[in-house]
Structure formats: C-alpha cells, structure tokens
Image (cartoon, rainbow, N blue to C red; front, side, top):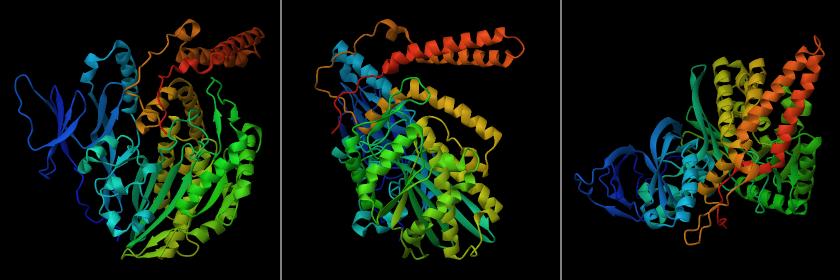
Length: 596
C-alpha cells in the first residue's frame, strides 16, 4: 500500500556531464538509453538530443559524473544550472533509498555577458557571488523513487492517479526546496530530470527489543515560504507564513506495522523582528501590532487545513522582551481558540531552569489528552490504515531550536512508547529507558536532528543538546553552549545577511529583473568603507578578555581595577561606534523585484 505506483517516467539516477566550450550535455547513464539534454552556454536554451555532439581538438569536453539536476536560475544577463556532483545514501524511507546531497556545482550559462554593459557585468558578478554561497547549502535530501516532501499519512492518502504522476507533481510545494529552480525545466517538459529536493534532516537506526528489531526514522522538512537565517527571518509575513517552520516526522517500522507521528515548529505567528545591531540580543520589535490577530488567524487556519486540530505550545519567558512577545501571541490567538485550536504557555526557563528538564513531565500532563485524542498513523502489515493522526502539536520558543527540540524529543519519546504498546511490543508500564541500546540510539537520533535544524537556521548546533543526547546536562554541554552562542552572535552579525540574500535568490523570493536598467551599487565612503565587522568583533572580544583578566587580579593589586575599567570602557566604546552604524556593515547586495 505504501509503495508508489510506477510513474510514466522514472527519474534518471546517474548522469554524465559533458562540458563543451559552447554547451553542456547531460547524458543518462543508468541504463535507461534515453535522450540527452543539451543546454546552450550563451542563452541557456534547452533541447533533447539523441547523440552526443562530436568531439575535436577544438571542442575537447570535460566529463564528470553527476547524480541529478537541481534546477536553473536566471540572473541579470546569464543563467546558472545547478547539479549534484556527490551524494551519499543515508537510509531508506518506507523501503526507498534516501540520498543526501554532499556537493553541488553551479554551471554558468553566461556567454551573453560578453556583450553586456560594464554595469550589468558588475551586478551579475555580485549575484553570481551569492550563488557561490548557495553552493554550500547543507541538509539537502532526495529520493529517485518516493516523494520525500509528504508524510507517511499523506503518501498513504494519495489516490492511484496521483501516484502515477511524476514526483515533482506529487510534491508538497511548501517543502520542495528547489521548487522555484525547477520552473525552467518544467517549462521544457523534462520530467525525468526533475528531481525534488527537500532541506532538513534525515536519520534512522535499528535496535533490538528482545528478539525483535525496530526501525526508527526521524525526518525534518523545512518550509520554503519564509525560509532564512536566525535574526534575518523572524515572526510571520502578512499571509501567516512563519520563519523556521519545520515539519518533523517520526516513523516506526516493526513486525510489519508502520507508525508515523508528525509535529511542527515555527516562529510566533505575527509580525515581529530583531534588527541586527551588534548587541548579543537585539531588541524585539512588534511590527503593526494591530495586524497580529489577522495574521495569527491565517496561520492557524492553514495549519488546521493541513493537519487537523492544533495544540500550540509557547515555551518563551513571561518576563522581558520575550514576555511582550508571549503576551501578543496569547492575545492574538485568543479570539480564534476553539475545540480545534488550543494554546498552552509553558515558561520553559522558569520551570525547568538550565538543568531540570525532567520537569517537562508537567507539560506532558497538560497535553496528554490531546495526544491521546488525535493519535498517530498506524498501518498493519497489509498497508491498511488502523489509526490516523487527526491533529498536530505546534511548538515554539524564540528561535524554535533549543527549547523546542528538547520539548519535541520528549513528546516523540512518549508517542513512541504508546506506539510500541499498541503494536504489542511493550508491556503497559514498559518504557524506552528500560532498553539501554534503544534508549541511547533514540537520544542520539533526536540530538542529531536538533543539530541539523539549528545549523540551517543559526549556523551552529543546538544548545541544550547534551540533555537530548545523554538525558542530563553536562559541564561539557554547558561549555559547548557557550561556544555555540558566540558562534551564533558572529554569524548573525557578520555572514547571515549575505546568506539570507543567497537563500532569497534560490527560493525565488526575489527575482532578478533581466530587462530592467541596472544601476551599480553606490560607493560607500567614510567609516562604512573601512569598517570591518570581524575586526570589530575581535577587538571587543579582546577588550572583554583583558577586562576579566584584570578583574581577577584586582584583589591583589588595586591598579588592576583601574585597568579593568579602562578595558571595559574601550570595549564598550568600540561596540557603541559599530552599533551606531547598524546594519551598514553587512554590505548585502541589492536584490531586485520582490516575487509576488
């Protein structure tokens, strides 16, 4: 029942790239004996050909094996083909191999630049630089055989006609990472080359429970509607799409049974932001507060259409800036609360602190009835649906990373225990903790999952990951959190602006206008021209180091107290000067023409 019916055209699983001076040729080499695809390097026009062009001493091609075509992007004057040059099989999804993209390559079709104006060449170079950033995109996964954008329940609900469609037509657009990049190939009717790619996480393992083997898979699917980096993408847009929205699916296969449980995470669904200004935690700004109820209503209406009932768990603090956001969230959602929509606030830091995460049991007691009522998908060995998931838990903190992952792992663990009892593997009071091998692997599964989602949004692994990985807080884990927090600060201020532009370009949130007159970016002068964020960061860090060092010696010599004050003043002064110049140091290229 879970197997996909044979579609009219299978995807090519292995291809050979021929790089001629004037064209690219992509030849299927997986035994399909199909037509090859020729792409002109001047105008990016495409057509299918039956034979590889002849080689000569003048036209000597470079030849490389590739594993899929991700898509094509048009910039000011040229187009750029994106292909997969390295892959790794990371497991299987409902019996189908899943591959991780290990390396991408950008192939320019920009020979038309030879006749472009100097201004166009300059701007084209800036945008091409963003594609170099995009080449390093992490956490991309694909399958040649099954639709990775759909949960097991949605796959099971597909009709026979839908299963015959090409994979890209079955795909959920929200989770199709290369949705925009495939448009040119779709227009050229190149279905066997149209490889759906998702961004997120994929991990699985097998463990023994007595004489039985359980197979557990954890998948994260990142939504592309408001995709981006921490600080640069916060809150929701006017249509209710939120930053860092991720669907997490936990799949269990055992004794012929298949069970699936889906959770989601996402930023608080109203308009708010944090303007990057060199402070460690920029001030939260609520934008158009009067619009909050309408935006929240749109967001939850969309969730209810896709998942059924919704339980929103808000984990942020009740005080300070987080408290203001939480109050706005609660007030925005209040008018639309119903039997299908519940809201619970749980002050994670106040109740659990930094070490007592076992107190999440208090939260579980509050949501157990919802989980019991809305359940999970369960299929028997014949693929028949015995039970289905009727609702979803939506969890958020500020970043929807650290507190969220700890909470989701707790909920996932409880649901796994319920599923194993339902299948008949666990006794009534039996828990995962009573099986050491299963327990250890399960913790690592969720810790790796949390790290993957965090790296894609913040640039660093998740904080509080030691609790998820080991079941307790450790000194090394706290130290790692300190290093990762510094790393996030650096990325937020020094590199995420450019990375955000690269993401917007890939996802089609900004489309470069080919026909418009292009004005070169204005030249910057004064402090903006010479200031360098990383240098400022190093100076401030050095000043703080000497401040702490002097303070540690102040009890032996009062002169150190003076030097402590001096170094602190210098550090604050440098930070103040740089902060006064705000975001100008990010020096982000200008993206034209927002996509509607």
